[in-house]
Image (cartoon, rainbow, N blue to C red):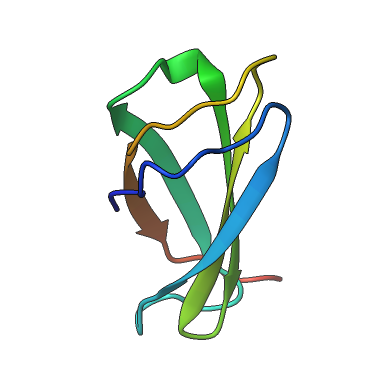
Length: 81
């Protein structure tokens, strides 16, 4: 996933939906910031649903950032028991 280089204000979170038919609501979606920008500048979270996941990207710095970061993801099939 390659983000746009739009300004992400300090201490601000943006979210988007990743559509992928293999994702189930009980799965685990692992995210990794792989390139562009400082790796310690962002927090990444995924909230899976049926056929998609909401991805949140948070700028954890004290300044605005305008970087088209690249995010890698993996889906781990899981069940609730």
